[in-house]
Length: 280
Image (cartoon, rainbow, N blue to C red; front, side):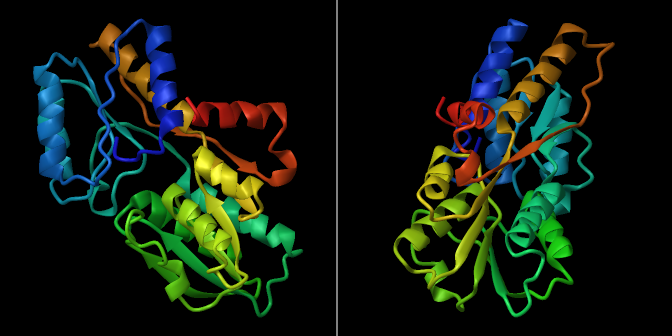
């Protein structure tokens, strides 16, 4: 797993492993990996006795071939959306509906302004340019916001969270910042806290306690949260089903839901359970 914020997902994996009576080993990587590095890591897990692999896709033209090589040795299931150039990869996946999350983010903005954004400007930010998840989220956001008078002034991507601290401050002034992933939402919250957004309001997609903190402190207006717990839980359950009935069980693609958090509903019982999983 390449995202250090995916505590919900890891918690879901652990809970499903306990329910299914199987062992799960989570290998985390903070930096983005190449296809070759990912395959080397996966092969090492197989050599160490892994019976199935649950992989987070990486960017690269060889992803499809890598998955095919791994599938010759063990069942493979993918976490999250595939990257754009790898849409032909046949392994099943468990993921949120990224287009719907982008659309939901736009609907929340429209709701706040009674569907009248005439003369308003928007900036869009994401961390990974080659992520199919982000591509779908931006498409959903743009499709939904279209026709309501707002202008998207810029869409920027490819920042490095640990280095590009003032990435957003360098962009043209806008009324709203739409942050399409967890790292972008955190960065936008940080920039808002430092008054570097020049009054822009932040609407974000995220799945970490830090992203919730910026919502609770008033640095973002809305947080769309993918159900990463169920991404983990369902992926492990699918893999365990395959192992228990290898020739008769076919793993399937699954799509999980998302939730809208606002400061006004943070302390509902349901949302407290979501926040709890972010801290496990």
